[in-house]
Image (cartoon, rainbow, N blue to C red; front, side, top):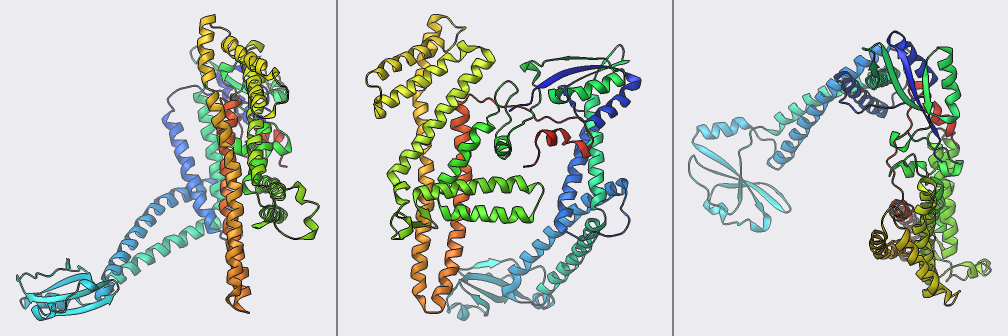
Amino acid sequence: MIVPMKKYLFLVHHLEYNHFLNGLRDLGVLHVRKREAEPSEELMQGIELQKDIRDTLHHLRQRQMPKNPDPELTTSEGLEIVRRFQKEHLELEDLKQERNALQKEIDFLRPWGDFSLERLEQLEQAGLGVHFFVCAQKQFQSSWKEEYPLEVIHTARPDMHFVVITPNGEPVTLDAEELPRPASSISTLKEKKQRLQEKIDIINKRFDRFAERGLEAVEAALHETEDTTQLISVIQSTKKEAEGSIMLLEGFVPVSREDELIGFCESNDIPFLSEKPDPEDKPPILLKNSPFSRLFEPIGELFSLPSYQELDLTPFFAPFFMMFFGFCLGDAGYGLVLLLGATYYKIRTKGKRTPVLTLVQFLGVATIFFGILTGTFFGINLLETEWAFLENFRNLMLNSDRVFMLALGLGLVQILFGLFIQAYNRGRQFGFQYSISTYGWIILILSLLDLGFLEWTGGISTYTAWAGVGLILLFNDPNASLLGRLGKGLWELYGITGIFGDLLSYIRLFALGISSAILGFVVNDIAMQIREAGPVIGPVLFIVFLLFGHGLNLLIASLGAFVHPMRLTFVEFYKNAGFSGGGKPYQPLSTSSKINSEQGSEKPVP
């Protein structure tokens, strides 16, 4: 759900404004409403500095140096490390490019060997020219040796490198590519490369010292810069009245924490106004969901946060996403690997990775369920095995025809569920009359389903279908005239083809599940053939290939099992649920150490 917000307007004397802002930062509850204006130069510099510090931290953390027990550096020293790192990192990249260019020259000259340029110059002074040629081995003709003084230097398929010596100015006509005269020898280039490598090593050692001694100082510099930049942004969003003596600041605070803000204002004699925000105010979005639904919030945020006036769809798509992932992966063995692997790492690691690993555990459970339902275990078709202990469970397993129908059935359920959400959300926002046409769509779809497949109500479905059409025609736009409604309704009815298209999109669940099972079967089949390679090497190669084949199939299938349910969620479900999105995250004015305090209170780690 979306946490309700309250809009506040503060009136502060300019002499007390800095003290007021520092108090708000310590409180950490107010999301300042930004004014649409060109960012100041000071703000842009702060943002650029944050980018440089984050880039420096990213590179230093990758070095994973042990912490130095020496006294910690100051924040200003951390900023100096950032400036030096940014400058020397550019130099390091230039040196690496130059080194790579030298290596390409060395590789190009390697077929010619480490010859002496002085000898070439001596030959030229003596009136002889040395020509360097390369051609395909099958293109080389032995008769060329009779026409010119020719020496083959290097032969390696598919090319042949050779030189021809002629008097200066005499042309050489051969069906081969003549290369330019080398400007340096290999030994000279290697010396240059070695000098470059020494410079690179010096810079890398300096970076190692930065990572060893200055990482915490750089992190502190980032926090300080974030705080300063945030404060500059707030000041830029402040309106000035009464010739700059009164400062007006607007913001939003969660209803659950407005008592803290009111208490702060009353204790500091700060006048304020508060009201319920309008949709046009675009309040920030703070989500508060159950521990299960919270695991899927990062997936929903990949698309967009909901707008303030609509519903948070995370709790509604979470069970479907979990089922669809299991359907697409569709192998009980792979689900067991995900479940056990995530459980193992969850025990070993703690912190930010815990919610992700918990999500993988749930996805693993769903995969095990659908793997058993479809009768697949590490590529083994359980419906065709002769294992006695499965006799009582085979009746619960589905063949491919039933799996296909199950995919369409789940798709139809999610589409209808999305339409119900859209109808409820429209009625909640604008009034019941605006939701009637959506209910008409639901009635029409269910009636067509009964007429075409279920045949539960007989002729009644014919009448309910026409009733659904009537609701769509008459209530698609309550503000329009009768003719306008009929015209828009006819256009909306044409959109029924889109609903059928959405339904067919769910066939991908069946297709991905089948493809994963087939690839697993192929891996097993090839492994069984490899097993016959010998009494000793055969079983070893059998196990190695099984591990490699199923591991690769698990990675590929997991990627598809994540991407395609996400596509069904963001396209088919969001569209039918009437999702508009575009919400901005709740980011309270606070110090960096407290920046996530509100999120932490509303979203504890599961």
